[in-house]
Length: 136
Image (cartoon, rainbow, N blue to C red; front, side, top):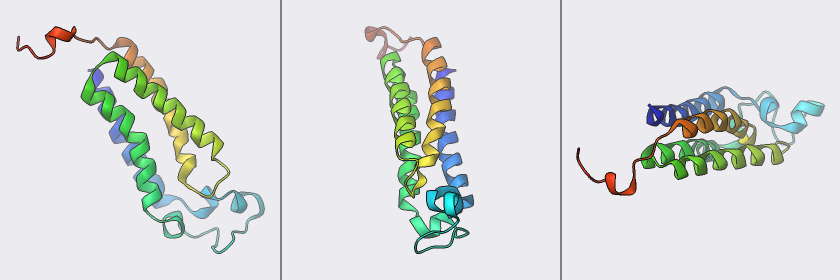
């Protein structure tokens, strides 16, 4: 059950990143467009993926999906709590870099993911060390 929650978080992060990347304009991403309605070398109505490129979007998707995927694969309580803390750090990075012209606003998704992940980590049971490799 807990593994499926972690996988759902990872798949949801990738889906959210792809959907946001395809639908965001520079008005959504750029602080200059939000404040004064003008961008530097771009129009505020331009698609963000056309101006910023696809690779920063891929990086944000991997950053959001990696902690829950690692927690789903490892299925250790300690790794799950590490994934929750990594998601909190990603949220804080999103807050710090919110004023930059980048996809860092999408890192705000890490906070609800961390909340769901902490609930999953709380109810997660870890097998004793000697029981992991045995077939029962």
